[in-house]
Amino acid sequence: MIDNFSIAVTHGLLLIAAWRLIHRDDLDVEDPPERDKEPAGFVKRPASSGSRPDA
Image 1 (cartoon, one colour):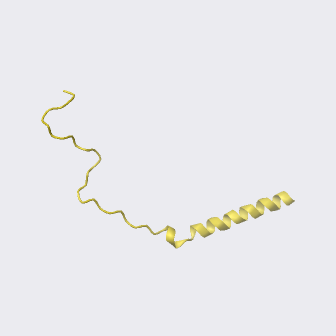
Image 2 (cartoon, one colour; image 1 turned 30 degrees about the vertical axis):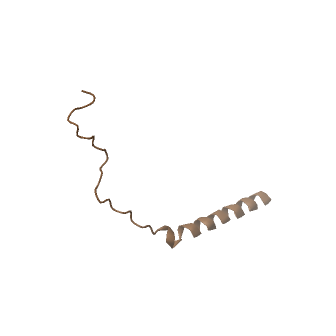
Image 3 (spheres, helix red, strand yellow; image 1 turned 180 degrees about the vertical axis):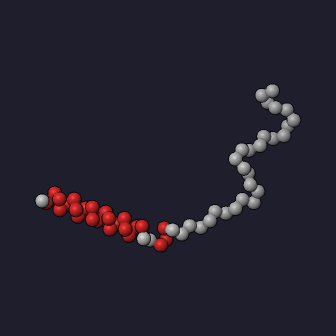
């Protein structure tokens, strides 16, 4: 009986902690990221030297 009571108490405390975390207002607020002045894309373009190094 003590084992069941201790499990119920610990799970109850975990539920209370989760409930309080879920209902916090500041967790849903996030500042938007700053926009790039000039988008770089996914790949950097190689310097235009006129010749390919692997050719």
